[in-house]
Length: 190
Image 1 (cartoon, helix red, strand yellow):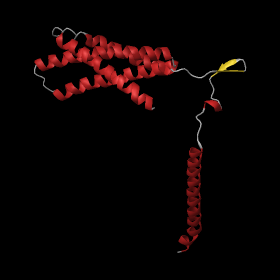
Image 2 (cartoon, rainbow, N blue to C red):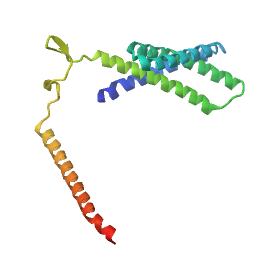
Image 3 (cartoon, rainbow, N blue to C red):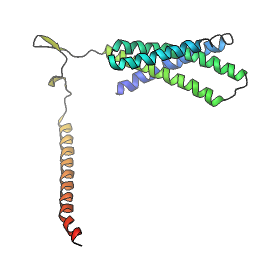
Image 4 (cartoon, rainbow, N blue to C red):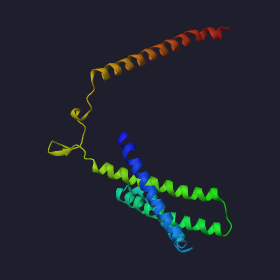
């Protein structure tokens, strides 16, 4: 988990910031309304992605999931171009709603970040080798005692102390329940 926080998150954030900056600058320096035609294409691609992800619920294909993930990254890059030019066009036509314009771009940024982080996490998971052992004529990836972390005596004493504390609390709760049960008939007599 610590490696994930120290490596993948900053890499995904920096990659997202670079992608977002490049596509935003591309939209800003392009001719006026040159990327607005992408709206229909991007929404059609987004609809196909939704349908393929719903279909993947039944198929469970990793290839379809990965295709959907990479296609989503490309579509979101297109949405950065489209939304930036759409915001510029709206602002020139008098729509000065800066809050919703920022929300549009923020959602594009967050979706890009999510897609890129998932891609990096999948690639990181694939690049780490899993221990395989030869057992009964087959390669096995099961866990062996030698694969488990070795705990020192202090770990065992802390775990035993926690177990004893939990057992004491359970016994105390059982005694309280017994006392309540023994007092219950007296409440009905009054």
